[in-house]
Length: 360
Image (cartoon, rainbow, N blue to C red; front, side, top):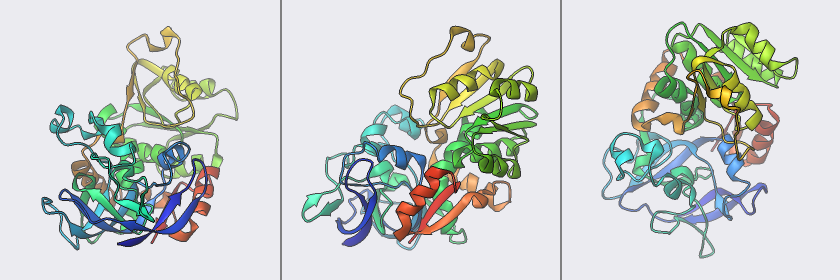
């Protein structure tokens, strides 16, 4: 079928809306008509080096139009959110840990299906896609059934897409991995969508002190509005001193969403004895380094992918929190028409918006 997609023609370049072809779903795949899709920092990072031409996007939501012959659990007409995919066969997948699938990179970042084909093509030539199981910067996607999460038709499809990555990543880092005790202290470095989702989860978990660190005053104001007890602008003084004033003995938990070496070092150094730091950010630094004293006293550093979640289980739980008013991420969302994808990317890069969502 012919679809509209935002095609990345060259690394780092703008997206251009084009008519391209989409193949029918395979036996274990579903065809989804995309209603809306969030733009994530991972899209922006991979746009710099993903093999082109390509279609990115991985925070999609929509309506199932067709299912493969082996698909169970979803049917045409179902409303779905989409998340990352996994092989389903390795010991980690079978153990309920698909975010750490042994084939994760191959099935999410190669641009192709496991058999080397692509469902996307243009003028008879294959286009790279299947990005995190979706490539949902498009009017329609063919996705593995493992990447699809059925949701209630009562839920606004314009909100739910980012739960599949950004919101789920931040909240999952707190609720699934770090699991702070009631009354504990937590600090989040980077007050974007992932960071604020972590802040909301920390308040839901009963943390008494929840600090947000950023260089953007607007983002810090939003973080305070949505539950942070403290906001620290790291350009307005020595951040170490500012953090020590909040937690004199160090924080129990820290989360880095920035992917910056200097920020992660600060996050680790802000911890108290037995403190735990979760690393969720993909950013500019390829390497991280610490003085050996930084990880003494029982401090630990944990890498976290996708909120360490099983999307079919965790995403509905987050949506229940949202419905109960305990995860009000709507305030982060700014909607843009799909035709304004490049304007939405610019607004996200500048920090003008917390979470850009494209509507189709």
